Image (tube, rainbow, N blue to C red; front, side, top):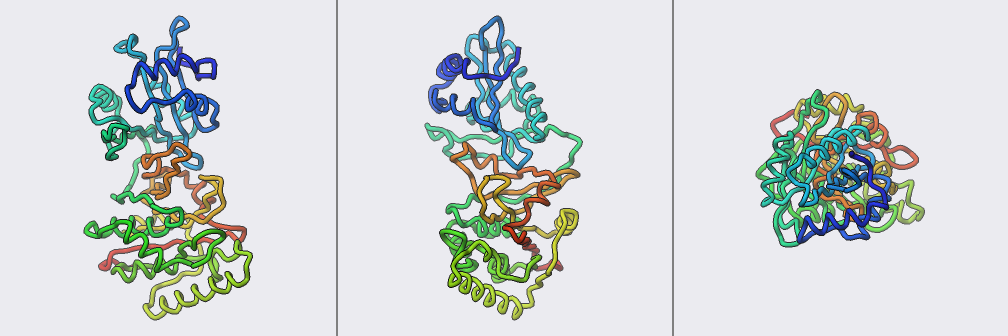
Length: 367
């Protein structure tokens, strides 16, 4: 029988964990926490009152992506089809949560598990160096559970932002690297772009990066670029209480706008629908979109993501912010599928609903 685990299964789950793994074990405290989380589900295979194995899923709020966080079969019950049964149940549960992709990490030396995933249709899409406690690297696998959806993805390399306030530079670097694979992206470049494009002040903490400064950074690195905004006013200013800070932000934006005018960088005052974004993408542009982080992280701050593809129902994005406190890894942030209707709702920031999109093109393409 496959059923959802409860706290009454805690002793059995910890026992299976300790008998299955030498390192990287989930603690009793972690099991207790994950069994009571709203965005996690643990399934167990039970026969005659004995739990033979478990599989734990995490669901990303605001996206249609699930992650197989942990999976173990008690050693005495291996080789009896328990693993396949649990994975099938996990895939069904993933679809029940309106998720269409299931991802996982596995040790490179775990050939038995790798062979099983491959037989069940999982495809490798990345490697994480030094992922486990003994420095063994992890292989990333994914299975699309809605095969009728055909993804149209560009090969955008993933870059994880190294500071809480550098999502804009990280997104910009990913887009530039997609268009120019020879371009070097690293932390020095990330900080340089932040210095070039920061608004100086923000709602709190360090200044964020607005669309105009980021567009100029891309232009000075040899890319064609255009900007779409729905509001000619200063970005992010409504959330700043100090009038002195607001004045500085206005001056910074005016300076950016004057430089953009000198370089004839197009600024469009209007909004782009998801359909229009997809059309631009299909013509070779790589969009970087301002979203509100609230729908994903339940915190109200402006956040930049880079679009990596579309299909008939979903927008796919790279999110440079990896929320380790929520048990996420970079696996959760690559080509995140977001329903188009949800993306329309999250692609705005603040009470004024400010919208901004930066489109990058290669020099030899018309913008």
